[in-house]
Length: 432
Image (tube, rainbow, N blue to C red):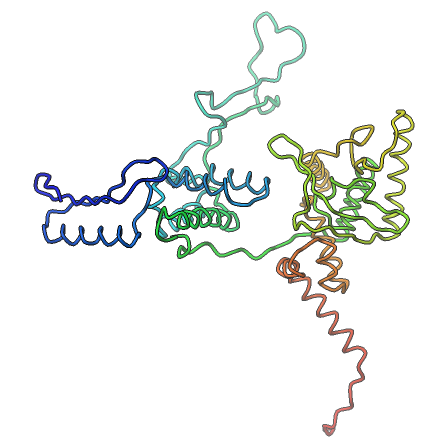
């Protein structure tokens, strides 16, 4: 105990920081000598029982170290790094890992539910770029040719159609509970690792109250809208129409669809094998196993076999015209003559979104997967078969969680079928 003016500072040696190699001390000050003795005994007990923080490492360091050793897919790791960089580190990254508490975590969740930028509620500007810049830039629409001698006349930019780019006023956009749950998972994982490494004594994320997990609300297109979408896709391009058709009838994920090669398609028997994903990660293309790390083989109906046979014939014709040898390992959907590289994943999603916007239909590519599932379930196909076609793990648990409403509709139809096959006995109640 050291006297510093009118106060006493208690200082207890607590070992060496495993990250920095510096000596660690537990310190606290008080003006009461009896309180100082109690603090001294408390610190000694913490050190003896190894309940004190073993490092002054920052929380961002704990997350970085956890990501280095935790077994993750590259795409998942990339996503976790983005979440930490965008939401966790600006709020808690510079706090010592030992200072993270359940209260701090719950405060962060509350702030993000109000505004993902964690603004203070005052009027502000959402700047387009960092650093000094003009917040409002006008690119005037000029008539062709040289400017007149007296310069261009005054005009109304709105009527003329001049391009105006400006930094808009800030609007609070809350972060969804699903995203906050992902942040909670990342921080809980990093803090659990810190406990295992004896950096801290307990994990505050275990007791922090995380946001309620939202109930999945799939919004598939209606059968009428699906018909419009397929027709519009075919009018744009037969290859594009084939892609949209195939997603509708198989429910493939985008990455699974783009990874398909002709060696995966059995036109004679009517089967397709899904064994890979095709992704773009940090500017590089990656082929890896499916999301559930399982290979599945699903049936194709006669119409789909015919559609794929015509698609294959077009590929053979193009290869013949360009004097390129057709190959079994060629991708089904490609802009390359030899089909050596598939469509760009983002390009496919954007093209589909633009097409639906022209039709006035609110839809995205993944909604076609929902369409496939809901149509099968409402038609009475059993849950396990639907889960197998979609590639859901857990024996249908994921399918049931996401598509519970449509399972209920299927169950209602099943009840009507059984009731319709039974002959109701005559009532014994006397007629009035």
